[in-house]
Amino acid sequence: MLKNSFCHIPGIGAKSEQRLWSLGLDTWESFFDNCAPRLPTKRFSTLDRHLRRSVSELEAGNSTYFASCLPGEQHWRMFPEFRHSLAYLDIETTGFRSDPNSITTIAVYDGREVYCYVRGRNLARFRDDIHRYKLLVTYSGKCFDIPVIEETFGIRLGTAHIDLRYVLNSLGYWGGLKTCEKQFGIDRGALDGLNGYDAVLLWDDFTRNRNERALETLLAYNIEDVINLETLMVAAYNKKIRGTPFASSHQHRLPSTPATPYRPDAETIRRIRRLFA
Image (cartoon, rainbow, N blue to C red; front, side, top):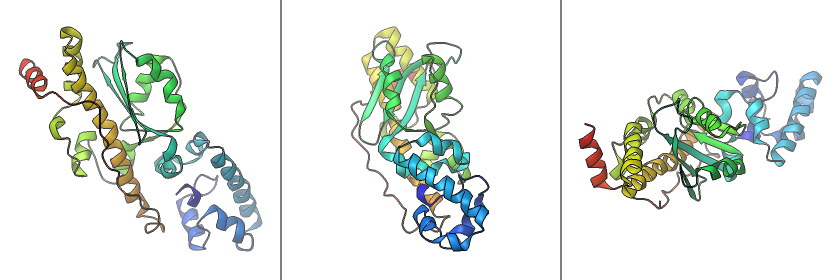
């Protein structure tokens, strides 16, 4: 979709973009091939200059350029072009935002492999590993995950970022991640019903009682979040595309669910719920 986009160019809004599409200028390539006779000289010059830079930035893999130029509500358009270097990201915490060590676990899924980071074990590795990616996808990450990560690690994450909460809101889906999952028919199986507070209790059980099964359950829960983000991202992208002239050509197949290295422990879940009911 990015190569069909013109709304990242100064002076080109939604109506102007649709006008270009209606003229048959529906890709950057078609603009270079056909547009000179169709547009006023000044408009042509602006488009030509910015599109040539767009081609150059895309070839260089510079996602931050497009994140800075595209309107925020259009960041979903970056998804296909940067899917090869994308990280679905989610954190779990102690529940105390003021705690400088509030992050307990982080899950990252790149569409192929799942990576887990645990406080006291390998959490520090996240700081370097996350810079491998050119695009991040979160749910409510702009107001929670990313600020907490930046504060905890003392870094500035300037990576291009799609926050699915806002993409799904624009499609009429509201509520938290679990609510949206249910609206798309996503089943969490043994993890169904667990929430952020349960994640806090699982970490507490692990640290107080050295219960590895609690940690394994927490990691399974954290991983479920990032795996489901991929399904939601693809589904949301397909719905967004339906509002464009590219509905028949740009659809993506929903991903299969990958195997995960951790399994929730039913007895641990029942016990923490009894203790804190």
